[in-house]
Length: 155
Length: 290
Image 1: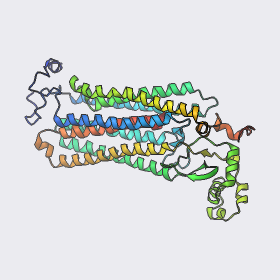
Image 2: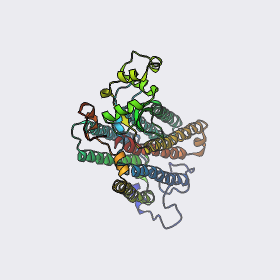
Image 3: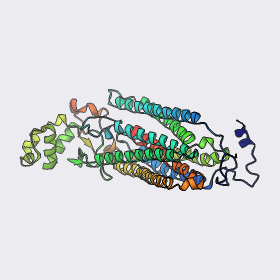
Image 4: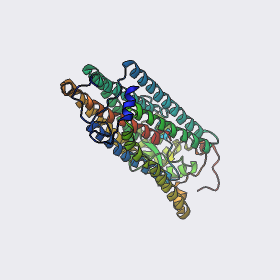
């Protein structure tokens, strides 16, 4: 690659194929639009979750599904940022693997700790009635409560 | 794609060359970012762990619904989407700065780095406003059988479940003159605080329409610590990224990279900046969306 100056560091044996300005601009524009569109979709889902919560009968399954979709969209965003903006996709496979393989630990990390938190909650709800009573919202549709008759059985 | 073929055919592990085909500093930046990803990951996962251990967690759409200059109007997600777009755009300008560096275009590097710095500072400004609003914006909260006016801090969380109307009625009798005066003022703006402070408690209680109050119980205390801790740590990354970018502008201006023959340093700063954006994607997910 004679067009590169000799000042380039010695670790680099192979230079990335030269990208034309036009190609580069197209790629960056495409990725920017993609990231923006994904973000807008995420915001739309966030707002729908808000309206579902406010509604008469919040469907918890639907909310959970929406949250799952948002998580997947976030991973897609992360993929585009890392592979296009950070150019990891253009590096050689050896190097990509040294970054990506350790990150697989997150799969265990997330599952283990979320499950741990959840199990702690279940144990406390079972064995610590005070915790359960003091932290569980009393009314299911708390938002509507102000307009309802006070329930006789409540303290 | 003849060059790609050469890359695949090269015997990377036969010695005499770096098997990663990457300059030392850039490779180490990647490993630093990987370890930083674990740091942020550990913070966010511990947040998730605590959140799953609670029976109730504040709804982000209720907590983050303010917009500068919009007063008390309810605008969930609006301000944080502005912050998100600021970071995405600053990410793009950083990509353009790195590209200008590839071409040895000094003026291009300075121009795009400049815009990146502007984006970073705008983001930090937004975050400062958001923190200030959360800490100083006080809400009537049902704590220990009293109505207290509290902001979101690391010690108290005003975003619990909506309190029952008879609980609120009982709590009003135990509340301080100050709390009652603020509640009365909220429903009757014509009276100033000093005037209300001078009234007898019974009169204040009579002025407050309990059915119209939207008082929440105190929520999980951990929320504040996690929110300020993680967004603060991210904000610190943005801040150090801005400092690094400013240093890069000065070095470019002084022709340091021109003399060196390459702009690899801009690429490393670029990696750091993109990482800050990457982390925000996950902070945005964990605190504002789900």
